[in-house]
Length: 283
Image 1 (cartoon, rainbow, N blue to C red):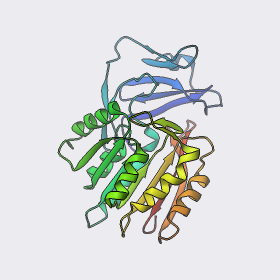
Image 2: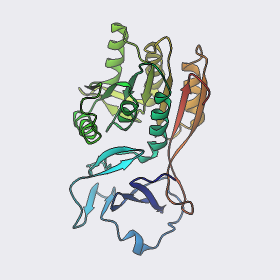
Image 3: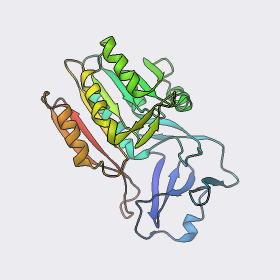
Image 4: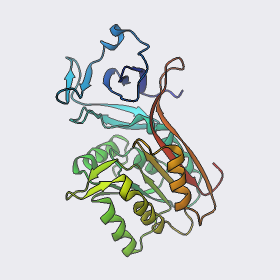
């Protein structure tokens, strides 16, 4: 396992215990239906814990800073507890961040990337580090600001990244009309979300139109599609089928799999979503 600042320490009984740099954090994890492997004493070392019972809230211990930074897959992230129980990073994406960097770095041509539902910018920064031009889109003004802070942490302040706050459906339709094209598209849609002006996104209703619009925005020589998801029922096979239909007119290979939070080999990995990738060559 690569050496970075994140590690899953334990999981079980509907909880996960994670190490973010120097600080242990306990959060709910409904998929952790097995028993914990570590003792209560180890879990009680957590500097922060989040609960969804009664009211959603953090229990923050003395000595925990309001924010700090960690490095995952060579990318620096600002970590800060949010009202939703998030911390500004989804570490299960780190194999995808490595793949993005490796895939773009092998290309001897300019690559233009579109990152949708881009959150705090892990995939955006991975692509920018590899030399790509990136359009980063998220409906949340606060998350785009957070992503820009992460860019600053990675000395990418002046990298060719366009930061856009918009509803994804409106943006894609506008890009099609403008005849803009992208060599790679990354998307990690939520189960449900609202656009910058209250527009509703429901993945079961919107995913096929969304992928069709993405297909229209691909350049004549596309490099890859990376589609990940945390919605129950959107399994690796389901994502692979969607991407296969989307890219049926393009020669390439598709790989699929589960995403995991991982710790030491003796600890259970924690399933945390699925992904499907289309690549123009052999994966």
